[in-house]
Image 1: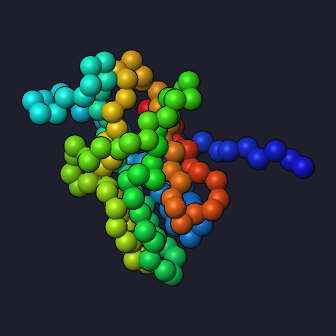
Image 2 (image 1 turned 45 degrees about the vertical axis):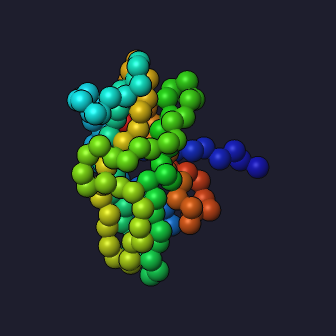
Length: 133
């Protein structure tokens, strides 16, 4: 039996998940401001994501279905309420509709290379991995 090789996508690539699609549009570090400070030695990053429902039934989505991972394999899976609007929190996406929003993560300051992993609860296939630059 041939071993399954997980494909890593690039930012801006439209990736297919069954009848649906996901695109990572952008990633930015958030400047520190009063009332918006990460823990010591950490920084906030925000990721601009679009999902598209091209199926025939509504799909549920949640910001918590996204995880980021560094090159050493550590994951950061507790997205904060987004620090940039529009937020990508949770909801129901009707057929032939799109949802675009920002997800915020807190990661160690020294990390420069990250991957976004997306595995929606409704999907039973492999996760989508996008290399963030």
